Image (cartoon, rainbow, N blue to C red; front, top):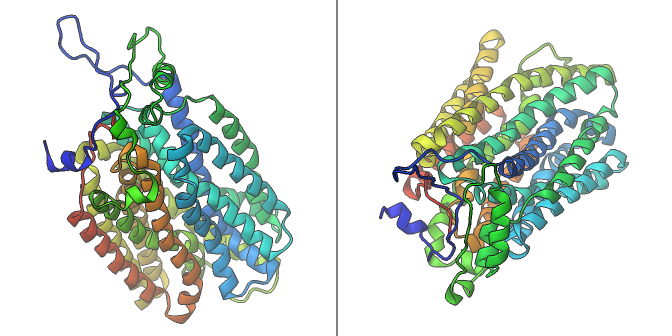
Amino acid sequence: MSTDQARLDRARSVQFYIDERPYWVDGTEAPPPKMTGTQWLIWWLSVAGKFFEGLVVFMTGVAMPLIASEFGLNATQHGMVGSASLFGILIGASALGGLADRFGRKRVFIMELGLFIAFLTAIIFTQSFAWLIVCLFGMGLALGCDYPTAHLVISESTPSKTRGGLVLSAFGFQAVGAIFGTLLGYIILTLDPSIGAWRWMYGVAIIPALAVFIGRFFIPESPHWLAVHGRGKEAESELQKLLKRVPAYPTKVSVSEPPELARKKLTGYRALFQRHNLRPLILSSVPWFLQDLGTYGIGIFTPTILAATVGHKTEHVRNVADLVNNDLIAAKGTALLDLLLLVGIIGAVLLADRIGRIRLQVFGFIGCAVGLFIAAQAGSYSGATQTALIFTGFMLFNFMTNLGPNAQTYLIAGEVFPTHIRGTGAGFAASFAKIGACMTAFLFPVLLVDIGTTALLYGLVVTSLIGAVVTFFFRIETRGISLDGR
């Protein structure tokens, strides 16, 4: 048994088919059956949460100048708007994500999107800065809860050999959402070049969110979760729904209920901070925190940085037309850079189940550092050279972060913990990471003024290299390892 396998082996208590292994008549192993319609439905409904996160968080970058103008924001308030949804994600991932361990994956999967829709609708009508912050925080709260829950409903219903690709392809829709949000902001600004255009940016997401909310009522509960809670018969029934196909395979499923000892395991944060869980806790949390320092800081304020360094922007904004013109210039550049997020996640999907999570994460962190270092050199130049360095550095950063740490930290966090605390562990890791996101979102507007872009980029080079080191020394490779019984 490998060292990684030994670390992950948590007293197997659940045994059932998720990794289906059909055999020919002569006893040789046949190719696994295709994913069922129910498994694909779960995947698509999980995709939506990541899409909405990318849409809301990155679209805030486009909407920021308009919001700042309408509400007359100072630098501190500007930072509060940028960090409110991220702070909500921080709280939601830890405070609500663990609910999936207590009440089941499906219930929380439904609840979180209902919460998101409520605040998404409210923000359209907000007339005060305070309520704006409340609405952004509330949306983040729901999206934070979705971090562990969406991962769990996919990973606990799909085969181990393809689990990484399926989880990451769903996670990749965060990049799709980021691109769509930026483009949507550009289109709305073009059609409605007014201060209040930012409200439409959020409003258009309500109808698709409602469709996803309804769809989540029609998926089965996780057989893993049911089994570790001693509900073997229900687990068998839900597993049968999950694997339903024509012709039927397998024709019969069974779940062995966990022994009494397994049922009495510690749960929640008491279990999470036990000594044998500290290594996976550090691996899942610290690198994710370090990568969020860069990913969210650069992602949210790319429009601001680009507007200040490239394009023919109006230096002294005199009216709404000048403000919108500057925002359009920044949105164009941001959309181009965000395409590299999508290319990076495609690479992660293709490679995670082939060469492993740890290698990609270490390589990605180093690549992020190189990209940020290139971008930092732009401060010493002007004109076309400055533009080339900014775009080259940010493009490399966006590609490498989604190939490596931005994708792999999410994947690893949902795989290294046992079933009875998987939601709590993944939620804590996501929450800890968002401390980094909130720090950059809140402090970037102030630091951009106080120390400048170049110093900030050099600081992020250092944090990226630290992320590579921590990943290497606390590594646990989960590629191809079954989650059944953990």
